[in-house]
Length: 222
Image (cartoon, rainbow, N blue to C red; front, side):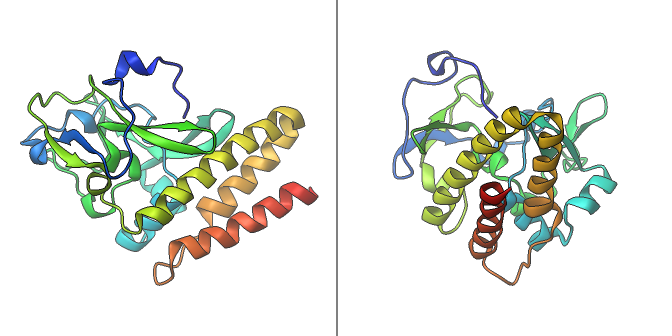
């Protein structure tokens, strides 16, 4: 999701790499769960998140939609899934009664990232620290790569770049192809990367690469 804001207004003005230290560690949240409420449809799920859910929860997109944990909505022209915020307090569906994440080991990348964000530019990205999003005032420094808590960080970084560029391409294709073209491409997006289940016994990146190759071939040959 592109945010039409000035980085200087929402960050400390710095961009970070994975080996940089950043004041993001909120000490286990200490009974705070503010960032798990009122997020609207902003916790967008990518294919690796679906793989995490498949491996950790044993449920794919269809089951999560039926359960009410996930919803579909339009993001920059693409139909994508996001976590549901429910009730008067707009609490994340997976937040338990004690205000703790019930799927912490399988939580999406957006959740692992917070209070960091990603700034994409020229086919790559850096991280930035959101200064007004977390109410913990005495956060400690932690290495960015450790904070995002995802194995094989090099492969994960490359995946995020490929995925971001693919969504940008789809957006352009949809704008050029009209309403029917957009429907067709959104079905390709959902079926290829979300609705078709992932094998948790296989490496995610290999599965993603196979699907991306097929999707790009479809775009190329129409």
